[in-house]
Structures are given as structure tokens and as C-alpha cells.
Image (tube, rainbow, N blue to C red; front, side):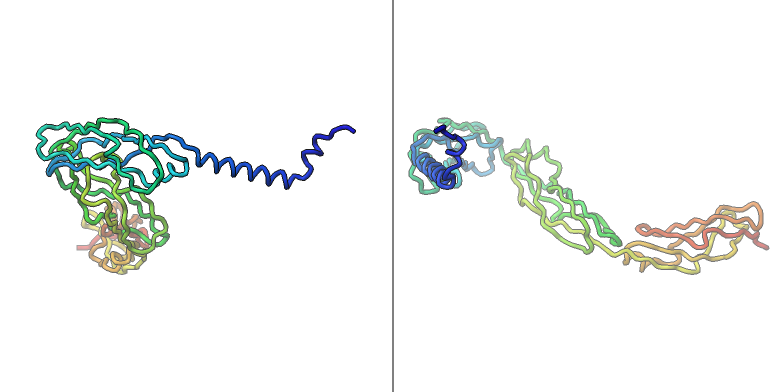
Length: 303
């Protein structure tokens, strides 16, 4: 009888698949218990004397741990810790720490063995600490919904913060920016909390890491102002009709406050009596205005 390889593979495939899955799980379990050695990042905190600060990021420190994969994984979720203190008597700008396995503190109970610390010397640079207040610059864009408009600027509260750190670095900071944010389809005034972007600050610290962003939104509205006089340049002409009506559109609070005296409707001087002249209108800042009718006749003033 000829051997059929395809039929042999297909036969009892559910049992074979289950056996393969169990074998894989068993292999993973065995591997998780096998001892291995790994480099684990160490969290380092350095306490400096009053009015002294680090001028650079703390260099990377790693610990060599031995243990099963199952136990080593615990160290990634709760890294070991080293705490060091720069003595108050330091007068220079450079200090060196000697590191040893005895300095490492386990912050999580794990069945592992510490073999070494890399590097075994840690050099830090210090400078006199300075601080200054700098403005907060919002990078928040507010896009109102249709028939709404933003009134005034987007502002940060507070509008300034303290930057604290090495004197040379603090002097170079002219202002801080918030994270970039775009808010769409806004139909009411609001306040939101936005983080300050500190990605490039290094060891420089802030008095606070977030600010409130405030903005005002108003509904757009329109109003007709009647009886606005037309002024023709030159002084010897008058308009027919003598007044027009002006449609004013803008934020509701501004539109409600517009008076006839705030609207200037003008036309160029005419040469021929009865000539039709286009008129222009200028309204208060923050509103748009259109005039009706958009042209008038000129008539010489009879003195």
C-alpha cells in the first residue's frame, strides 16, 4: 500500500493542533523559569545643595540582574532605584559618585540576584541655580462652529511661569509654549487645561507644568441701522436720498452696541448733477457693514 502523506497530515488534525499548542505553552513556561542575565535601567535621583542645580541630564545607569524571565519582567514595571546626595561643602562644578551594587534599592519584590552596576562612576555637573519669570505662549487654535465667532485672543492663565535651573540655561529661555492643540466646532466660551511643552528643557524646571487656556465665543448676528447720512466729499454736493440703511454683522455684543454715529457712509465728489455715485461704509472694528442702496445721486447744494 502506498503511503499518502497529505492524508496522514490531515488525519486527526484537531488532536495534533491541540498537542502543538500545549507543547508551545510548555516550552514558554520552561523558558520563563530558565535563569538568564539582563541589563535593567536604574532610576537615579540626585539631591543637590540649596541654590545649586544639575546642568545636564543624569547619565544612564543600568544594573546587571540574574534571574528567571518571569522575575526579571517585574523590574521593568518597577525599576530599581539609586539615591545620591551632593555634599553641601562642594565648591566646584563637578562631582563624582562611586556606584556599587550596595547602592541599588529594589522597589518591587522580585526573586533576582544583582551582579553589577554599570557604570561604576557617575560624574555630574552643577551650576548656581537661577530663576526668572517668562511668558506662556498658547499654541491652541479654536475653530468656531458656523454662525459663531471667537472674540479676542486665546489667553493663558497664568500668563507667565517661573523657570528654574542653571543660570546660563535660564537666561536663554525667553518664553514657554503650550502643547499644540486644535479645537473644532466650538459654539461657546470655554476654559481647558493644557500642558506646557517641556521637551527641550533638560534639567530646567518650571513652577508649574500646565496652564488654563481661556477663549470667548459669541454668536454672529445682524442688525439694520436706518437713517445713516451720506457724506459727499467737496462740501458743495448733497445726496439723494440723503440717508441710507446699513446692515451690520458681527459678534452679538458688538452689533448691539453699534450706533448711527459710528457708521461713516461716504461718496466721492461729483462733477455732474444727477450723477450716480457708489457709496462706501466704514463701521467699528470687529463688525462688517454693507449699505443699501449702494449708490446715490449727487445734487448741488443751493446756498
